[in-house]
Length: 176
Length: 180
Image (cartoon, rainbow over all chains, first blue to last red; front, side, top):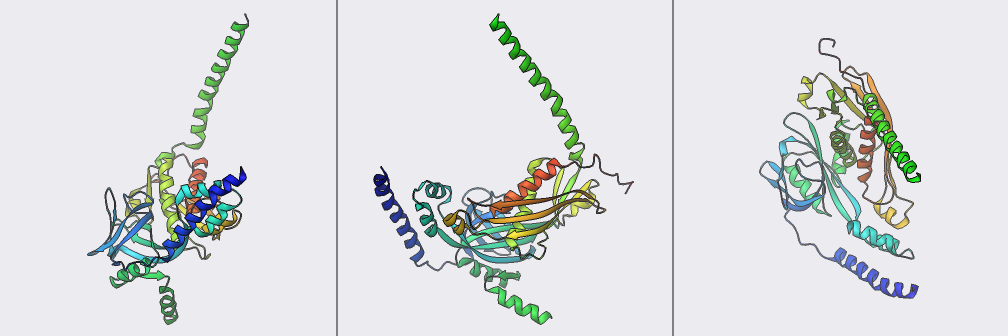
């Protein structure tokens, strides 16, 4: 019984791991930073949490367009600050988590070692027309956050985090 | 005869249950929610308390608090920090959130080890009046230990804060504008 389970699971695990490694090695085509695929984690007005869509800069607005439904629009002038960060996240969602939990002999932990990916996070702080403070978090593919942040920085948004930390420190020292 | 006795027992039980529920429900409502819906609340930005809390956590706590407070239906309006509409509201409470401790976790560590990598947050939550009088105060935590991303801790935290506010006794009525 155990042998049969193992015989079934080993190919599944190997296949999953090979898929993960292939995904990591793939060379990513250069994407125009002004339109990027993103996931609205939270805080976008009228958009449900964890909605996939496209984040773009159009004129003086930052726009999140989900696949369906209304778009969220933030005037760039109202953005108080943008913070970039990077975080490891598990891929596969709930099905993967359940699959890991169900895998015997600690196989789930082994899968857990590979079933994660680095993402860039964009944290926006902006003001509504009535003065209310608003925050929004967006998840982008690794490397896209920096490019997108630079575009916004050109438009006058204060950007911090990732590569901007050094410039921030220099500014602080100058202020002293 | 036996059947009759059983039936009457059941009838008594049902009557007792209905009677008790009728008695307890209004009392609970009377203790916890007298005039609460008259209050509006402004959610202040999260005070990180110099603990190096990542900005995404600050924003996530703030946004989740707004969502969870709306869900409780305890307040007639839930306003954002700095909202100018708050100036016209007489019965206004201010929710202040100060982070007391923060343990950054790792989703990968959680997946691999099960016991390590938990994200832990503990905040002091204060409901104050405009004059600064603290109406309710609680230390609340929000953790993520097994499943879910690190930001899930902020969702759990906000839910616990909203629950604590629902359970706390707020003043029956707001001071009128003349009293102020």
